[in-house]
Length: 490
Ligand code: GLY
Ligand code: MN
Ligand code: MN
Picture 1: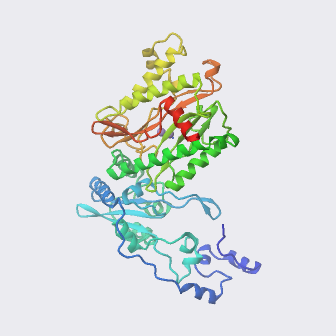
Picture 2: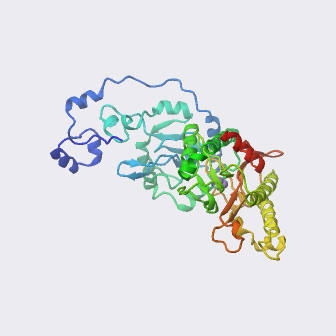
Picture 3: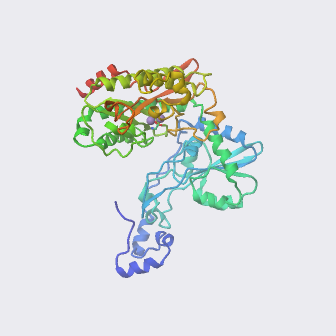
């Protein structure tokens, strides 16, 4: 990659060291002749776009803001998109807007901030953004965030038309926040500039109430969100197919080939992967969050692939398939796989409106405990005693699912009574993902079990009369998995 314009001689370099970076970047840079500076100011076409249509979710974001407004009357609410995070020197990590900001605006611009200012009984929303780069003062081509370096931004007028929210220059915001009177709440953790401006006006406890509200607001998805989750699942299914087609290449290289293959699908179809892909071959499948993905891929072993495409509007799938790398399960792999499949079927059947959130977990755990007892892994204990003592958890390890949406573990700061202790409602979307994991060094199971890990995970939408499996275009039943793999490998 290119560096920002550098001084041309050692003398100039020394001179430049002494000047504050801001000044250097804003047009007083040594090594730029007056003629060049003059030239860069003009000769550019007017590219302003007129009459832009609102984004597809503008009516939904307006409704979401109205719900937020109703919950916090009379209070100024500040919701930042977040800022770039430095990776090293002048390179940054890929930017991903905060979930809260994107949910309320449909926008994903770095440094953006949504402010809801109380007006009468309601609020007036303003989105604060970096405007188009100024070409007169050199910011356009000399500043690291100038449009010549990072690409064209929407003008504030264009942004207003697209988002349906009045837009102002974000550089004015810190001063306005410092001067603001009355109660304020902010979503923390995304924008240090905003936080510094509000430091004397907010409390952690009140800010947390705002974050909790926004987490709970996402428990029930609207129709735009459900369509996005469907898209995420469709792209994810294609990504799994991509992987099956290149398993021979993965055998020649490593789990990284699988990670890279899925990532390509995520970037081309969507925004990104929704979380670090778990590409766990052989005994790595027993490590729940195996994201190093640097191990060998061997015929005769299983591949546990847990991956999800995040759509361009930032909704992610979260899907796991456990696949025989050579296309056929052996007898023991199939016995364990079938048990997890049966547990998942029981779990999915328990997802319906009015059911307790915990029901699907309990249903899946009961099946797994029964299998473990049948296989003689729990001595003389019966299933009820095993469940009472939770002894199956040595091999089932994790909860059976979680809410899904813009975050893979969506709604994560919702109150217990609103989520884990609540009942399911139409429009909720959750994963059902039981698993069995026999660690390679587990001396309590027969040797042939050791190093086998199986998880099957699908994304289930609660409907008026039950549920829909959004990820069911990927087969789960063992024979169907084998037939699907054979078809793809040709
Ligand atoms: N991929 C993380 C999870 O399944 O929850
Ligand atoms: Mn997962
Ligand atoms: Mn999951």
